[in-house]
Length: 460
Image (cartoon, rainbow, N blue to C red):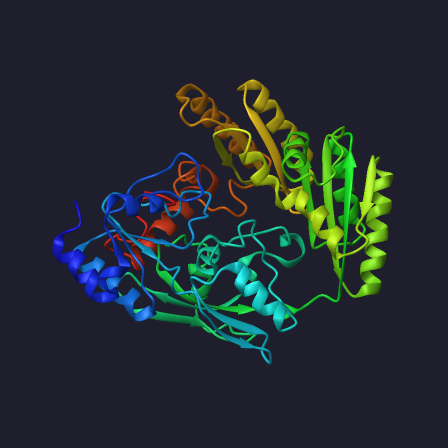
């Protein structure tokens, strides 16, 4: 049912009429997120500037049974912020302040609309370090990172967003404001509600403030780039690095298709006669960094690396790292539609999974470039296709099914960092199982009995 005049008028009273969008041309940019082939116009878009306004909006929506889809910068890759018909899109990008940086307790408090890059820059300016670095960090918001439990290139050593959230301010569906967590390193009082909201994809409450844990900035870093004639050699290098008790901060890979696309796009100087590229970074105490970098170079050469480049300085390290950070942008230039997927398997099954994806690409006559986080088994098979071609999109869907089925069969998961949203909710029951699905539904119903928050996402 379309939003009523009274509802729109009430929203205007809460945030100001200038902060409510209703014209079709204004709504179009908010009809989709970073996920290909998913779009739906909302009823309106609302821009609150403070928690009290979010609370008032949710109270109104709950009373009128109006669906609410929370949104940051719209960089999500599972359709988590795609609107539902006639919903309120609650866009938090104007709540973007960094409220406190506490050097004594190594914490930072920010509003949900602050970008990940702004948080990283604020920490670095204080000689500190916020490790999570999703590929979209320049524009993704911290509220979205928490809602999706985002990962990033440094996940192997430093973990994911969950590992750095110490507290949350969350507005519940009825408009109540809940604070959970604090600056204490140890706190085991009661249920960990904070952890329940992390990764909940906007289905349990609206995150408005985030208290983050910071680390001392590493004193040194070394970047290496190795190329191989076979993906198995790169995978074995990773296994040997871990077996040598080295945990790099970054251990990333590109396949042949992605290497060619990146070189054509960024002109990094990558060799084009290889099947796999491995980006390795170690950080920490200068002596340990030098020792680990030398050992990683030795193991790369032992496993048949065609070439190993060691960055001489920060500028060269940035150029080498660009080979991985530009992967998605480079692939996106190849075809009208780029579908970046996300599956994770145990490290020991990584080479097998990459070969399986290559076989799927041949079977369904598709172009797939694969890159990702080799150190933690998180793959990003990227489909280069055209959503206007219905027959080809059917083949893409069938390929997805086989890839996710194989990931589950190998002991993996259907998403390592992108979330479930709309794109993967049909796969969740098989992965999670009957009892966990029932428990998740009951939890969601307990928080949101009227079902107004992000309806249709994760599960029906």
